[in-house]
Image (cartoon, rainbow, N blue to C red):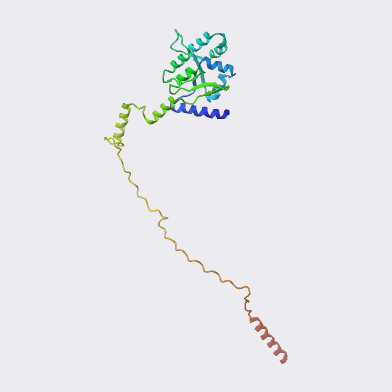
Length: 254
């Protein structure tokens, strides 16, 4: 289960790296609700967060988030101690603090130019974050840190970028003029179909080979009948008879 969760997180991180240019160290804005959930589930944020995101991280918060925990009383003193250990980023509410959810949303400035991750358990804040494209969301569930899948607004922006809808009319006109100079597009808007000259190639030597004549079927071999007897040669027999005649004549003459 842990390996599967790690693979899903790696895939989601790749989405934000390639489409929204997130780089290490990852900056993670944390509020009091996330620290309280980590304390309750005995999660060491500083140790487990880099392992889960597979990279260097910078844990940070705002003055408004610290002030909110301070106003909530002794019940959240443990979460406040944890949150005080992280870097404090300057917000626009130094003189008049606002709720942490409102403060973190203002830190993103509508487009998240500083590439913040946001770690929270606040449902209201989570709903607002999903409307901003390019904001990775972290939360705790079942005693583990989870990186949420990309929101629909992030997917829509990536798809619009791929279709070219985010290109301004001025950029479109400049691209068009460059294509016209290079002869890729005609001035009337039609593509110029440049025919590529085909190079002359020698014929394939395999296609020029003479076809081999097909040989006819080989005649079947004559089978010898098993009962047929081979003729016996009598040359040796005749020779022996001649030799016997010479011997007898010699004996008679002697």
